[in-house]
Amino acid sequence: SSGLALYLVFLVAILIIATMVYAPIRRRRHRQALAAQPFPRQWRLVLRERWLLYRYLPVDVRFALQRQLQIMMANTEFYGCNGLEVTETMRLLTLAQAALLYRNISQDQLASFPTVLLYPDAFVREGELTDELGLVSRQRHIMLGESWQQGRVILSWSDIEQDLRRLDGHNLVIHEYAHQIDGYDGSMNGVPMLPNETQYRRWTRVMTAAFEDVNHQVQWGESPIDPYASTNPAEFFAVVSEYFFTQPDLLQRLYPEVYTLLAGFYRQQPLEWLGEVQRLGQSTINSKT
Image (cartoon, rainbow, N blue to C red; front, side):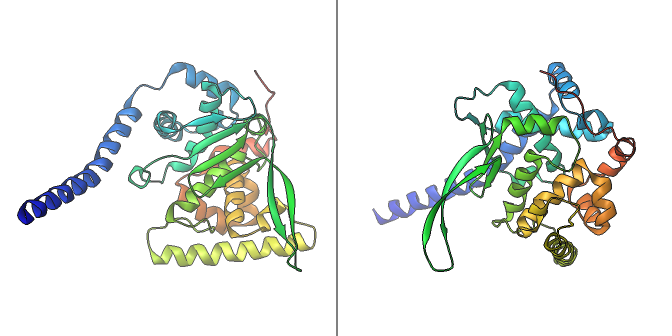
């Protein structure tokens, strides 16, 4: 009987190992098949009409985005909150912006994509605040979005709609998904997963210097970028990611090393797409429903 027990233990171990090895292979093949499908014409029309940035994407960037978007549309769960009915168009326009950030992220790293909780407008979150005397009080915070380490993104649809038609350094989806990408190494600390120690050292040096400069400017009330970037290194990374994709000329002018760092990390060059657009002041479009 002991021999049979050992055999069963061995067999179970083999099955577990086989499952662990095969699951990523099966997932990769499934996603490759999704990405290879023809991109729906209706999706393309919606993106062109509703999303300003999409109109300026180069062909190769647009193609890569479409492939990633098809994977994310099939693998992202959405839940409408406060009575919001989530439509396919809402899912498409939300995930299209997120897909921009995934060009340099290996599909093998992603067992799943974050679940999206979509609110119609800004939402209220209650929490406890402890002051310097140790007294605890309950606080109500008006939130546009949140990103949780457990793979959950909370977003306001009305703010997403605004972001779709402007290029001004603010983008809720990019901000919250940058937090998710930051957390793939297990910690949302402003330092995403990088390939080697040399790049970690460079990232820390460049980002720390820029973060400290923003803090200094915020203290003097003269920060040209969103003061929220001074909150902590994680928020700094998320905020400069917003500027990188939607107002790259300003980011490159203020912090050229940060722009170069993000261009390498995201494998994108938004300054080449938007430089002329922003010089001409074409940063918004009218809302269309």
